[in-house]
Structures are given as C-alpha cells and as structure tokens.
Amino acid sequence: MNKIFKYFMMVVVAIAGLSFASCSDDDDNYNVGEFSDGAYLYSSFSSKTFKPEDTQTFSITLGRTNASEDATYELKCDNENFTAPTQVTFKAGQKDVEVPVTCDLELGQSEDVMFTIPTDKSSVYGDDTLSLTIMRDYTWEKVGEANFTDGVFFGLEAVVDVMKAKEGTNL
Image 1 (cartoon, rainbow, N blue to C red):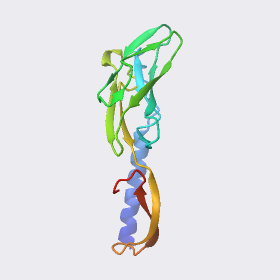
Image 2 (image 1 turned 135 degrees about the vertical axis):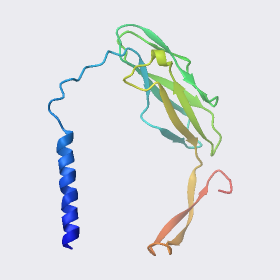
Image 3 (image 1 turned 90 degrees about the vertical axis):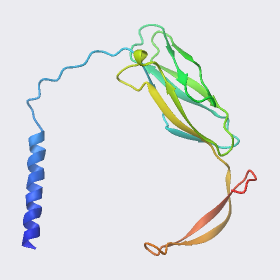
Image 4 (image 1 turned 120 degrees about the horizontal axis):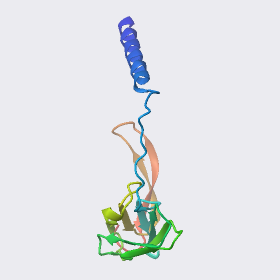
C-alpha cells in the first residue's frame, strides 16, 4: 500500500510541476495579426430534420468583417437537391445576411450539403465552408409498449414504446 501511495504522490507532484512550468508571465512577444477583410458562413445548427408536413426551407447566415460599403459575395452549393442564391449582396452598414435555402427531399431521405464562398473573398476570422445534414423524417406514432431486458451487462429492465411510421410504410 505504501508503494502505491508513494508512486501516486510522485505522479501528483510531476503533474503539478508541469502545470506551473507551462505558464509564463514573460510572453510579451504577441503580435496582433493583420485585419482580414472578407466574409464567413455560419448557422445555428449542423443538422436539421423536417417532418412530412413541414415546408423544407431554412436559413444560413453570411457575415462579413467590414461593413463600410456595399459588397456582393458568391455562394456555392454542392448538392442539387438544395436551392440557394448564387450571389449574396450586402448594403453599407450591414454585417449579416440571412440566406434562404430550400430543398426537396423524399420521406426518409437524408442529405449532406456544403455551402462555400471563394477563399480569396473569405475572412480568416470565420469559415468559408459550411456543412449541414438535412433530413425529412416520418411522423412516428406509438402503437404499443414492450418490456426490454438487458441480460448482457446489467440486467436492467425498462418499458419502451413501440413506434410505427404514420405515412403507411412498413417501418
């Protein structure tokens, strides 16, 4: 037991020593980088699911670092199931533009889509690509309950809902 405690204390002292050695107050050589004038893409989600009755539209945001004058940026989409404007225009003073995107997915279909702006027009302070996963899911309805027993690991039991797709499939 004493050997374990001795080795444990040695590890604790080594970790404490390394953490103090990694911090330094004499790092005065930080230089601020050059201002990056350009645009960037962002969204409040990375995946979105539409129900059968939902309108298949969503928005992504194109932002920019310099809002002093009017500007237009090219926008590309790599998936033909999605429709987005190919050019986005900013007015002077406008920092962000909500870009509407529509899609036409079949029930149960899931698609990955990537939006890009040209690298020479992008800002180093944001992303020039935005990847999203969009799905059109079924409407699931409860048709019963079942008892689930985990006999492999812990022997836990639970009552789970049995679900069926409302849209008339065999799911």
